[in-house]
Structure formats: structure tokens, C-alpha cells
Figure 1 (tube, protein in one colour):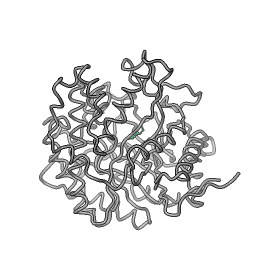
Figure 2: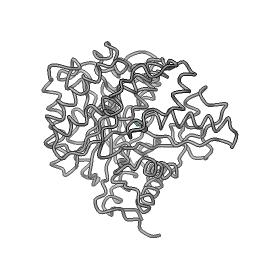
Figure 3: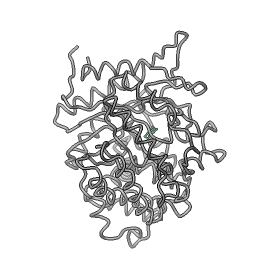
Figure 4: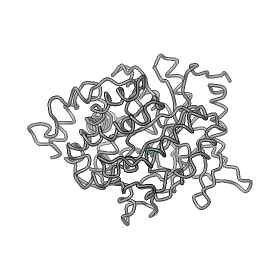
Length: 453
Ligand code: IFM
């Protein structure tokens, strides 16, 4: 077998987010987030759990950094929690919250691990939700204030910033299906939320550049490459809508093309938009949203195959309806070629100068055997097959600059709770003991060799 070598400066990383791992939900002046509120509401989380303690990373961060270092991890993508830093959403700064992230950044740098900071991974202060959250335009100003505070304090040491993680999830799962916090079920609200997230991204980019000289700034979108199930016109139309509402709605305005006209028309037909346009848009927004960035972060897990009879009736089924035999515990098809197709499409259609895979990984529940070993073969082959495809994309000229495994350790998988385990490190939630899985040992070797055998 030949060796697949990656470019010399390729970044090998791993990722998490604040609410999913930190715990300490009420400590050191942190206020309630929409996820605290949502998880504390009966019936919202499949296994009835919350992120109150999670992986207790708030107290165990030093141990977690040491573990990363032992695995050769070069870069760590984590998010900052807005309610730790500005408990009122805006105004007075909670120094203890900032200090936590400052220590984390210093610890990472001391371990020679590059911090990649996501400024918003879904834990909005509840006080801002009470004013309308992402559906109300003033949120943009509050977000920019929050970003200004974080980047002023960490911008001397952090040089990679991601404004938002997965605006589709914030907008659609949070405001249309209501499966995520804040649990709203209103199509019109979802579109307003999507717009304000994108607008806040563009408004924040110059502030980040000002506060963090020489930094790279980008946004992370989740993509689900789609295909029609058959050659029928009805399936094609289901595919077209899916691709538009999931993928194009978010990337188009970021690259100067406004919202896709076909999907605007579909939303008018669904009653999500009035016939005479987009009520939440002001003309100057287009330019703000399309503020040039340095990179696009992409999160890829699976593809969708669309047929007219499932489209729009059962979102979860439609998203990940699968023809391949292999599925992860999330029920998502394992389909590495989808990553190749996605990278190629993004590069060809949008001429993106630099791409990072900011998340890729798989949920499998394999736990420690009688000797304490976690032989998570399926995750290992998932990662290997996706990296093989990533390598092929680089060979073909696509500017892919780094790869972050989701996730560094098992954590709180939102409305699915703790049963879904994405980590390359096992977490025993009773004892908080971490156990390195076989996939992590394999990844360690990949990093050491800068490639795959
Ligand atoms: O756990 C999530 C993460 O927070 C965002 N991207 C997808 C992951 C797996 O569902």
C-alpha cells in the first residue's frame, strides 16, 4: 500500500464546543444560556440529560490539553460561551469568564497546540433570547459587542477565528423544527434568524481583524450534499429544494450572490415569506454579509438522497435517508465520496481560497472492553476513508488546509443527549475518566507521519 502524504503545513486538529463539554453551568458568574433553559425543560433531550456537568472540562482543561498533546494534536477548535463573558448579553464583562478562556489559550500555546476559536456555537445568553434572540435585528449589535470583547482579550494570542458554527442548525433546528434551543417552530422566524446570524458574521469580521492583527477569520457551515433518488422530475424538485434550503441559502449570500431566487419563491409558496420580498433584509446587508473572509470552515458527516414522498414530511429521514449498508449510531450514512463532491463543488462554484474541514467524525457507542481498551474500529475506518478522500481533493488542487476530528472527546450531543458518542477519547460520565480510543491512537500516528499508510 502506498503512503498518502499531506502538504507540509497541513493542520491536524480536533474540535469541541463550550456547552457540549464544559459543565460548570452556574459557576464564576456565568448566566443561563438558551441551552441551559432548553435542556432543563422536560421532554426536550432524548435521555433527559443536560450539559450542567458534561465532561467537566471547565475544571479539567489542563488534563485535557495534556491528553491532546500526548496525541500529537496540532490544533484545537473550541468555542467561547457568551454567557460566561457577558452574562447580561451585553454591557458589564465577567472577568472570571474571560480568564477561563485566557488560561485555556495559554495552556494550549504552552503545549504547542494552535487555538481555533469559534465565537458562537449555540449557547446564546437567555436574557437575549428573552428580547427575541436571533429573530430580532438588535442581536447583531450585541453579537458584535461580544466578539469585540473576546477578540480584544484573546486576539494577541489567538490567530484563527470562526464567527459562527452551522447557521443552518441555529436557524432551522432552533426556530423551524424546534428540536434545538430555543425550541421555536416558526418558518418565518427561522429565516429572520438565519439572516441575522449571517449579518452578524459579516459585521464582526472587521472588528476581529482590528483586534487580532494578522489573524485568519472565517465561518463554519454544515453541508449535506444531496442527490435525487430517481430521475423523476418530482425527485429532482425535492433535491433542488433540499440543496437550496440546506446548502445554497447559507453559502450564496456569503459569497455575494444573495439568497437563491428559487428557494425564495418556495418559501413564499410555503408562507414563510410574504410575496413582496424579504422583510428582514436591508439593502446594505448584502455587502456586509459578503465581507471577504480568509477561509471557509466546512462540517461534513453524510449526504442526503431525496425523493418526493419523503421531502418536507419527515425532515430527519429526508436528511439522511440512506442506501448504503453502513450507518453511524446517529443513523447517518457513511459516504466519504460526499466529502469529495462537496469540496470540489465549493471550490469550483465559489472559488474559495482556503478550506478547513472544521468537523468530520462519527458517533459509535463502542466502549472499554474488559482490559479497558476501546477498539472503535468503525470510527477508525470512517476517519481513514474520509481522510483518503480529503487527500485526493488536495492532489486535485483543492486548497484544503486542515482537518479537525469531531470530537476530541465524547460529549453532550444536543437533543440526543449522551448516548451518542463522537469522541476519539471515551468519557466515563460517572468518574470523568478519559480513555484514549483506538481511533485516537491511529490519528496520533497519522499526525506523526503527516499522512496515511
Ligand atoms: O455535535 C455536533 C456539533 O456541535 C456541531 N456539528 C455536528 C456535531 C454532531 O452532530
